[in-house]
Length: 157
Image 1 (cartoon, one colour):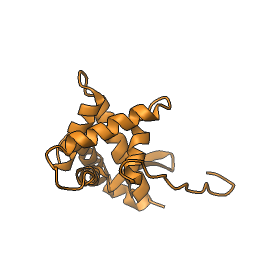
Image 2 (image 1 turned 180 degrees about the vertical axis):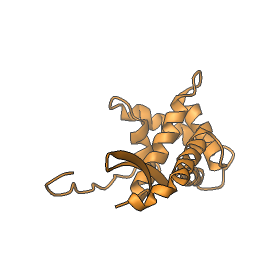
Image 3 (image 1 turned 30 degrees about the vertical axis):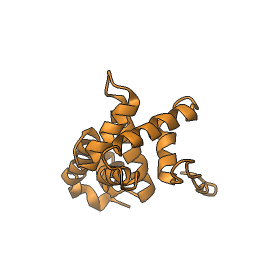
Image 4 (image 1 turned 90 degrees about the vertical axis):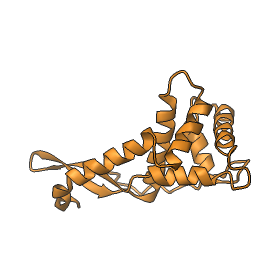
């Protein structure tokens, strides 16, 4: 643990097109090797692809619904007690929920081989907004692990 002061939380600058800090964080999650303009093209293109069917609505509604469906509420953390290591279920803070959801969306989209990242991210967001897809399955697996280890919840401190 840090012995000095806690690091101060910096505010996220909203993106240029939608004025949304969530989209700005998604762009940063997609970005590799500092190529922000490429990441912006991918994310904006994916949002446009997702919202082709939803012409009259807000283009970010499907993205926010997908993120809500992927966010984990519980996760397990390793605690060492008396020489044994236990997987202790803990509640996930809101900022970490959002970070994990974006990381899983982008990660499973990039694992789709033979498809451009823009189209893969769009399809992953579509599937997550309906409660399906790899990232929602990952969230369910994390919740199952927390449920299986709830006997060790008293080690939370």
